[in-house]
Image 1 (cartoon, one colour):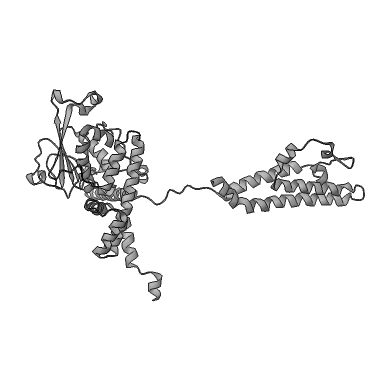
Image 2: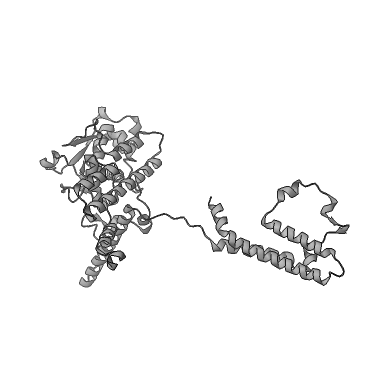
Length: 422
């Protein structure tokens, strides 16, 4: 299809240039014919024949010519031998000129139009990553200037306001979409969401995934830091980048407003109100008794010596409809015919679908300030009128990029041209 469109767009250019070549050949042939017309009247017949052949270049009839039986008429005209194009134009360099013209035509046509693959606008995850990268670069520059003013060497802190500088994404990672693969420098204890679902069990995984999508605090408590970090790497794939706040490992409990993913040491105490809260889920990683080891499938993995206890003050009923996106995620994970690469792309598409709904809801409620009745109608149109879906949209709204929010706000503050005229 692209070749056809390319040829259609190039046809006027090609037609004009080929017509110029034809006119030049005909002009040379006519001059030659007029010069020797008193000697050879058949030259005009040759010119007409050449004009026909030149026009056939634009509309070739190769199939008809191939199927035409060979006859002496192809080489004889009224008993006289057919004349070559070189003799008709009296130009010994004719074929070199034609070759040069056609080569230039191909090159000029290729330079005139170039196909470009349009990737589309950057996703919200990409915008948030770029904003985080810019903020971290500014903070690093501020630290460097502060240390230089005091005349001391500039130590780079490991953590700035709860964010790890060691995880600053490179330019290539910022401009690409989110990678759901676990970094190679860490042991991949949990390889994927499907792997985690197999280990925890469908019901426990559904409870955990529900709390993750709703923005509740997810607390992993255990001794193995690598295991906890791999769990966070896998689980954050379900959320937009702007909704992820991680404290990988801590010796004390951190409040939910600081992080929605928290790793704790076994000695850390979780407050009683958090343990009984419906807005938190706790996964206790314990050393498994010898009789409770996982089957042979996991024997070669670090998790074979652990058992996982998932608890929450608000258990998710398995018979409820629940989150629409969670049902689709579980359907993809339970389908063994889909590889994890396909499931990863499915996650990307689902997140983009629901982030688009978040954008519509944000503009409708925060920017346009529509009444509650209209908002309920909009949620019904978006297919997100259930209570869980509404809560999810409100949480995901916090993950919108500053660029998108400022763009909407500035468009509201600045009057349109029609308003200015009025």
